[in-house]
Length: 51
Image (cartoon, rainbow, N blue to C red; front, side, top):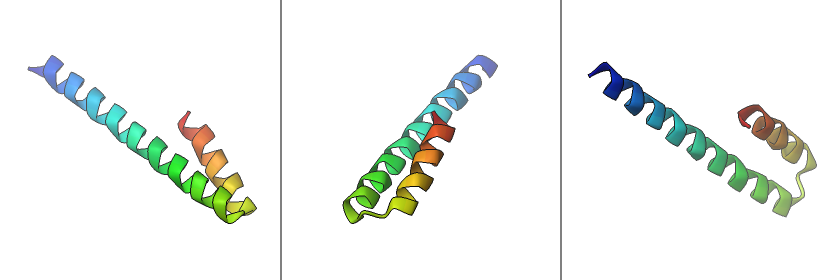
């Protein structure tokens, strides 16, 4: 039972991190489209944190 819970938690954590990464990529794309250099730098730094 415990092994199942560990695996479930691991899968949930991975799914959450993937969701964050996708969101950051989208936000970065929008910032680039708008030419918002400050936001681009912030989002790139945030992406490095999650990599």
